[in-house]
Picture 1 (cartoon, helix red, strand yellow):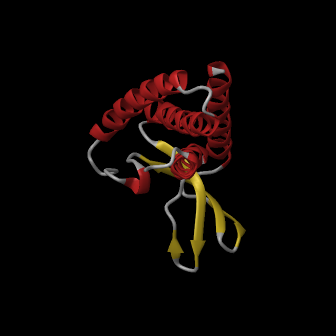
Picture 2 (picture 1 turned 135 degrees about the vertical axis):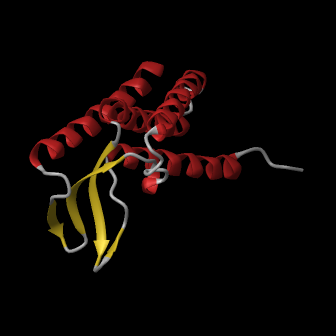
Length: 158
């Protein structure tokens, strides 16, 4: 069972890295391709964390966030091994693991994370992100959902 969850994480990593390489090889930094009135592909580099947190910290954030990703990935792998039969929880963990490792690869290889998905409305822009970020967000959402499902289906409190 654990192998299947780790395979899913590996699939997330492969899709994430493939899309990042495609964009990096076909776009110049900052180049923008509008696909819809509210969505563009734009090559961006994020040396920080989500929403460019600590992006101007002078380089230490590369190693800080890499260390956090390594510890989190080891912890998630342990949790996957322990809870491999809990489908929704293991799915969430696999998505988070794949996303964390996808962004870790960028951080180690380039010193920044490649982002390229950009949603906007008029002059308002949501921070650019990538498939790894999407997997982490979906995984976190599934964990929240699973926690509510557990309470709803759990033992009655007397």
